[in-house]
Image (cartoon, rainbow, N blue to C red; front, side, top):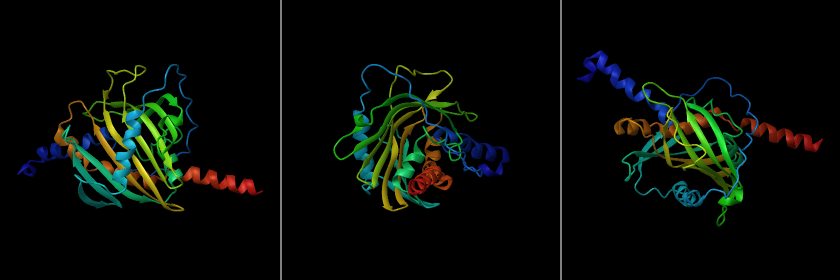
Amino acid sequence: AWFADPAAAAVAVAAPLAVLAVLRVALPSKKASPPPPPPLVPVATTGAPPDVTALKEAVARLEALGKGDRAGWDRYGVRKGVELWFQIDPDTQIKNSLGVCEMPASRDEILAGFDERVVNPTPWDKQFKKMTLLEQVAPGAVDHGRWKGRECSVRHYEYHPVFPSAARDTVVQSGCLVSGDDVGVRLLKSTLDARCGPDPAYVRMECRAGGYYLEQLGPRRTRVTGLVVMDPKGSVPRAVVNFVAMDRPMGMARFRDAAPWAPFRAAAAASVTNGGD
């Protein structure tokens, strides 16, 4: 048996663990969350805004998954309050992941917590290195039907390397949309951008579809459905990528436990108090 050889056992266990961070899997931090940094100033741009058609089209898919239409997905079980679903992507043969859990916060608090412009994600995502805002697009660019845009931008994400894998980066269109007072989505989708071409220091990941569908169930109770459809590229074996995918939705539990929305809740409470004085 493989475990009869200690050296072989160590390699078998260490190999998949070493690439966990490639897919943004990070261990939870026991340190207190730092206060959110000030918003980043968008880079001045000229010319026509980017085509966000694909971003708008992704809303319907994410909403359907959030409402329970998961034909072709396999339910794996529940871990730490997160319901896990997986699907082998027919195009890449890479495992797509879906997580569903409730969080003790409002829709707007959670959407604010997800946004790296104002929240440092270090407490719940140790692999995250840097986000550069390439362009801030008018929120109305993603308006369609009953959905109203709150934020739209082009972003460059960088991630720390973990031996033996190379560092990763990705350029995405990011959108935040809401419908009514209780439903919202946050979407990420890879894009090409001349301002941020390939960098030899990184392997460029492809985020084919990623994001969250939020449905507020009460004053501070929201069901969140998180989707990740991605390809890390590079030389990571597909078997290892699919093994790591089993843990990908647990980032939602780390986010929930880090409670990055707390500063926004405190700020809102202070605003109400000051307004009444």
